[in-house]
Image (cartoon, rainbow, N blue to C red; front, side, top):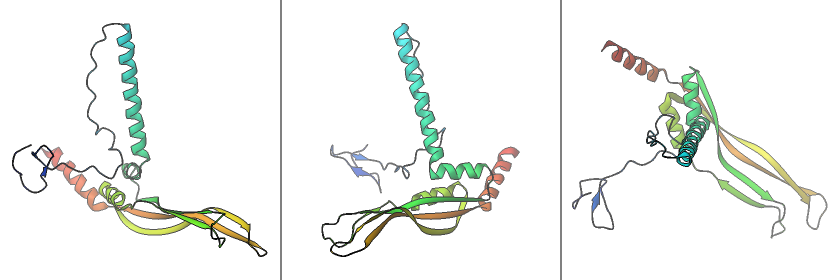
Length: 193
């Protein structure tokens, strides 16, 4: 905080003070396990109720840490890290890009009403996966049918069928050996010191 700007990225708050730039959070996936700040130490309980409350708080913290670790391992980047740690040569992942939903009744009586639900892009996620030690080798896209709706045609014979589904990107990564060489070089340098 300062009365003058410190350069690029500083911002002026409503209190008239300048504040330094702050790093932006990543894509929205939780950080890997072990990167959370350590929990503050719990004071010794004074009585039985405080002891139970402290034990419950510690248990809640453990459950929250386990849930955070499970969420990270279930994220695309967590899966990529697990495959890299298992020395896999390839890593494949499917990410949903958009979804198309249809309803049987349209106000215009001319087919189905269509609702398209685009999903956010995955460029940041793909970049983070490459940062783990993978190189994007191939990208493909598929339409996955999730259901269909049929109804009688209006003022004619026969049926109309509408298909619902989603578009998924299928990304194939190859292990990036150049990074692996860099990692082993760094390990050798650390060992020689």
